[in-house]
Length: 245
Image (cartoon, rainbow, N blue to C red; front, top):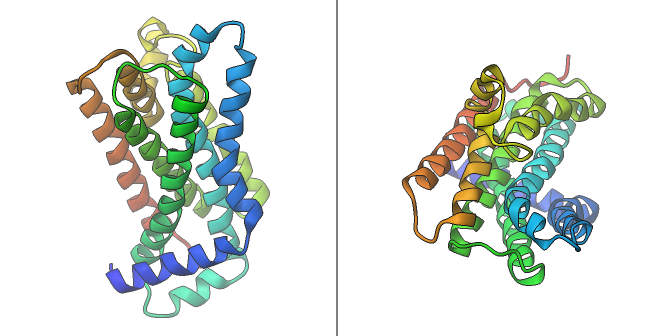
């Protein structure tokens, strides 16, 4: 990877995003709108919102970034932009790294907005530090970006890219421990959940929800989510194709 080429790619992607206000609104505002909706769905039961709000604070950005990134990367390939870029002295790692930096910058803004809204606008009560909550939310958004970059290589159209959401995101959502503790699932499902990154994202959020101090479990969860994001980015660079077959 060449740092100059990676940064140049990131700047190009950010310039493109700046001309697409609807996509920016989707990435920045939709998680906030979902949190507000969730808060008032459980208006009569604030304890329920407090128990699941922290987990969804990480899940909503992951889903949004996955959807936007997968479609944006696929569009680069279907329009021939990707083929022209890779004909230049630009490696696959530079391209994936540039996309990760650009969407990662948006993920930072998204996570800050959603976390600030949940804590100070919607009165989400957490025992731990807001900064620890923000870190997990940011890593979740980056994981969604990495997953979106990865699956875009296997889609031939934007419709197919959207279809990957039920295959990649929904199983993690069901098995992450949001609906029932993972240790109360069937052993086979618990074993599957133990290898899914969203499970550790939810565990990390729950650690902040219930513990004042930094715990070893929280550090483990953060490292696993970050490691999965880096691994998927590497797979995305390895599987990146110049054009759609």
